[in-house]
Image (tube, rainbow, N blue to C red):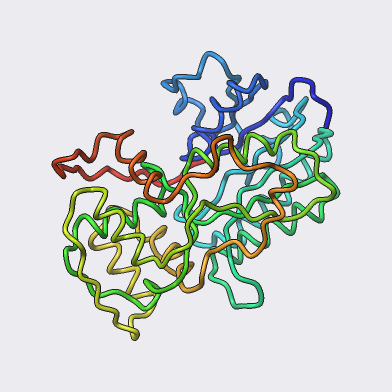
Amino acid sequence: MPAEKIRCLVTGATGYIGSRLVPALIERGHEVRAMARTPDKLSGAPWRDRAEVVRGDLTDPESLTAAFQGIDVVYYLVHSMGTSKDFVAEEARSARNVVTAAKSAGVRRVVYLSGLHPQGVELSRHLSSRTEVGEILIDSGVETLVLQAGIVVGSGSASFEMIRHLTDRLPAMTTPKWVHNKIQPISIEDALYYLVEAATAAVPESRTWDVGGLDVMEYGEAMQVYADVAGLRKRVIIVLPFLTPTIASLWVGLVTPIPSGLARPLVESLECDAVMHEHDIDAVIPPPPGGLSSYRDSVIEALRQDGSASHSGRRHLLRFSPPQQ
């Protein structure tokens, strides 16, 4: 794509990723239009006077017409997990609405943030839905980059907050067998780097690209590293293989502030490994200047930013806010 200033539309601008991507794109010199179901929720955003804010709902095709007009790159960062009982069907409809609006408006590129998952296995509803949305976008005829990431480490990220709250509240815990599954977390800073670069990166075709941080580890190991950084004693983890996703999600709901409608899809997704199976992204978007962040450094930064940990081990639990459009 040419090197001129890019006009970007960020859907889900009130969400965890979207609210951080908008200022990152602005700093890169792009024109940004932030879309939300309820634009008033962005009135207090520190970047509000530097971006255009519009109303739009991916489930309402008519609301997308004006929002997509004059846009070069659309960032698809909305999901219905935790907000809709039938989120799989709703997300597929939303993806088709985005395709229709993008084609009508002459959008040149769509960037979608999906999830890391293994090949050739049965996926959870959450990961299956993410995969289906990616396929709809790739098959649309509009140039599409699907970035597949695992746990995003940052204060407020749902997947990181689950690690954080379980570890904070349970010095000893009985857990499902997925604590031994492999994950490849990525820092919020590195995730934003790839998303910003995706606006202008030259790609040979529309496809998925795996992205991840430096470290591959077991989920339980990620909890122990968090405990160490937060100044907590090593956690006692006892695996109970018979714990089902339903029971595990109820358990997560009891000891964390994560809503049950969001907890269950997240827990179901932990039933398989979440690591990069290819590193083709390096040929399209080089690693961040200074290299990718380690998981430990990402946790240190997450706690530093919200002041929830100190060298003396003091900590405070965040009030978790579910993702929104």
